[in-house]
Image (cartoon, rainbow, N blue to C red; front, side, top):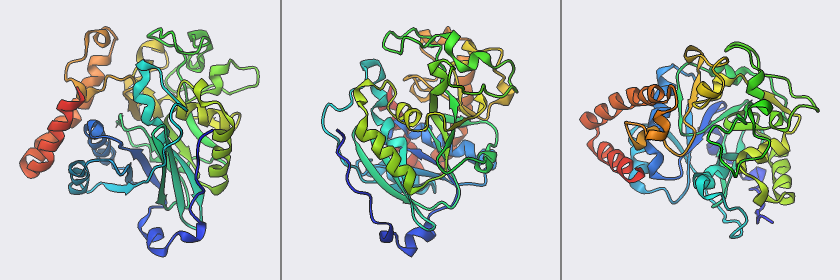
Length: 350
């Protein structure tokens, strides 16, 4: 059973904390320097589409100071969060999915006060606490994403206090990974029923294939609440985490079963969808491109051979570098310390 400590008291939130926290925000997580390049491009791409809302970056105490300094000099809003380690061996990802070890941290279990929310973030390495005010909504984003069109309309989605909005998981398993669920086949994938780029996602019925009930947590819209925090905690205490393939996604799918609203694919456009669902895909419709798989654009300008064989992957890789190159050029001219720190993190991440 996961060792969870009691959430901070609702009365512990100070006026100063409330005033410094945004009511609506995009929220992401940076746990290690090797993802700094991805974070900077995500931040820049949100600004490039003229989003009205800040990107708030959660960081753990272990993030090196030189990485923090880059965020500060780039004027990125940062909230440090503390963690509590769960028992060793409670969750161990498959060796091919070792990068999932940090995905627990994306779960901001939210504790509502009058106008401020204490966001909890759970990780296989620990349990985080952080405050961020929200009278409305937050949109959780993975750090390996690129914003191509303004999607502030997500803040206006009408979702109940006990629900969330997210995109369907793609259950096609194009890499044929044998440790993925046995029912992950194209015939069971919700995206297979989408007939065009503008078609709505399919409804989720009781008799729908199991993958229809699963979501991808790359983009999640929610209304933080104390009840939500307690409900998620109860699920964690009652579930066998060792049976979960994708920790954060499986938790959200379990808790919000029959209570989550499917979003159109383009708010979380998994780069593999271009090949697995070409009828649904349109480059022009993408709001948020998600660079799933362990191989990230910043690892290499040129894709490895196995990804080069995937139609469109090289082009999508170029899209990322087209945003990164001007950014790093500007840093080299105006902020040499940040430039050299960034270059160093990219060399280490290869």
